[in-house]
Amino acid sequence: MPQKIGALAGRIFGPAAFVYFALLVASLSVFPTTGGTWLDVAETENGMFNDPLAYVAHRSTKLASDSPALVFMGASNVELGFRPEQIAPLFPGVEIHNLALGLADVAAMQRLVELVYAQRAPDQRRNLVFVAGLWYGQFRQGDRGAVASLIERQARRFGLFTVTTTGIERRLPLWAFEFVVTLLRPYFLVRLATRPIGPREAFLVRCRAAAPSGEGVDPCQGIAFEKAAAEALAEAQFQALLDLATRIKSQGGRLVLLDLPVPSCSSALRDEWRQYQARKTPWFASSVAAGAILIDMQDMNADESFFDPTHPRLAARPKWAQRLQAEFQDRGLMTPRS
Image (cartoon, rainbow, N blue to C red; front, side, top):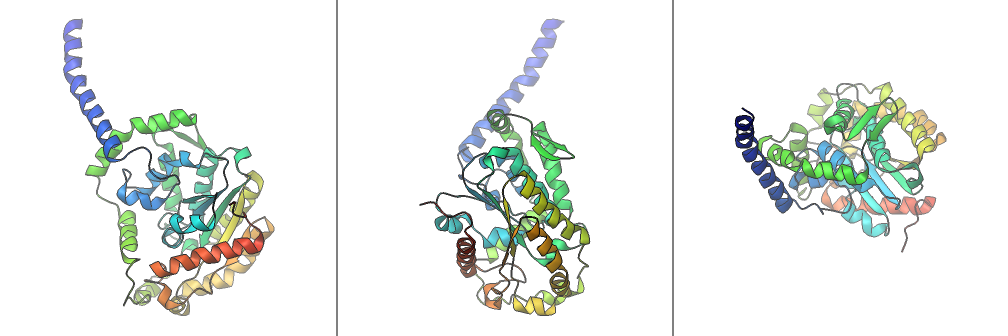
């Protein structure tokens, strides 16, 4: 009987092991482990992870460093507007990580900060700067807080992190974390081949495709529809911003708030924009008092700089990067090292 059980196990697990190792080798061949030096959610489109949340969680060991670093957070306008390849030459010697997630609100930024802290020990945060891109859409009510829940769910998967009342914590040493992620490659490869791209990822793909063109595109053609779907802004999101500033002040790093522009036609028509302008000032002031730094970029609102009501065209991106560098220099923030 034991021999029969052993033979049966061999017939079952032998082929399974062969398939597993074949997929592992295939994943290492098609998607080498090296990749980019920094985290950039735009890599999701052409990488093994077709979900930016999985990419950020499982590639987050790239954050484990004591080098000076800029960590960009926000929604898709931050992903497109602050490209690492354009920011890096302006900040030599500084790591550039773009963790912006489509539809992310302020609560989602809180979870991203926890993820960064999970990979970067307190004594490695002295030269860490979080750059939070803000616009009225991140303060909406409704289900936009779902992105924070999805980050938490992703962190719980496979036991790589623990999620407690104090935040997200890495459970394994760095080498063990990366080893487990390598072992999970066959799973992600099969998922990539079988899982259709989700609506969030499809939206970002369309945005990335539209960004280079922009010629003949009316940035405000969708305003009338969006105006009909306007929502009230949530007090909880403004409070989350203040909590974020307070936490970063106490646990390490600096927080820079970028008050991002939208096309002038959008600001003229959107009730949400007017709500945002009316309510943001005291919350921004409180966040600055808690240690944050505020940079107002709303004057960069020329309609021709956008290809829709939110996202900057390709030609506008270098201007955003140069404005950021100038504002940092004026404030003596993270002086680039030559």
